[in-house]
Amino acid sequence: MSLNILQLSIVHRLPQSYRWCTGFTGSRVEPVTQNDSSHETRLIGLKLLGHNGETVLPIMDKLSQALSDIDVASTVVECEGELCLFVSQYDEPAATCRLKNCGVAIAESVGRPPLF
Image 1 (cartoon, rainbow, N blue to C red):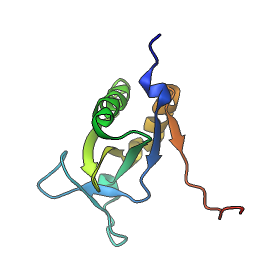
Image 2: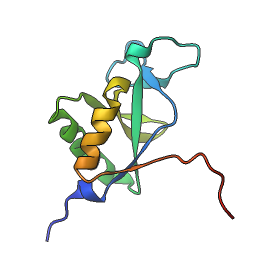
Image 3: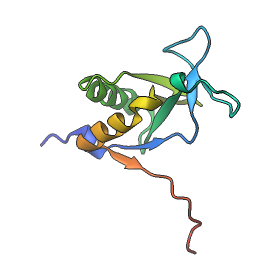
Image 4: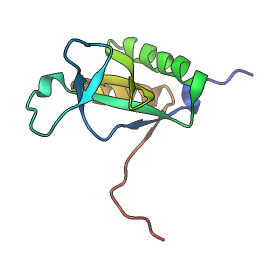
């Protein structure tokens, strides 16, 4: 029995916005400062939870392929020591919808303190 690896995946949206580093478009990102007004070039990052090492890249490639199937551009780039999937902030709703439809869980940040 073969399990669909995307249905076993959980991604988390990185808490800040990013942009391509000057001269490294498509290969290196940097956080966007609060003073940066270039909204059209902002990226959001999705980090895979619960996987590490060699299993991350094939899963990220499948996530990227799922997005390219609906013409959403994405790139897998290392960020803070981990591979992350980056898409334009304008494509975030379509990207998260597509991933959810493929069975990927999207971890949401909750702004409430723990109950204990």
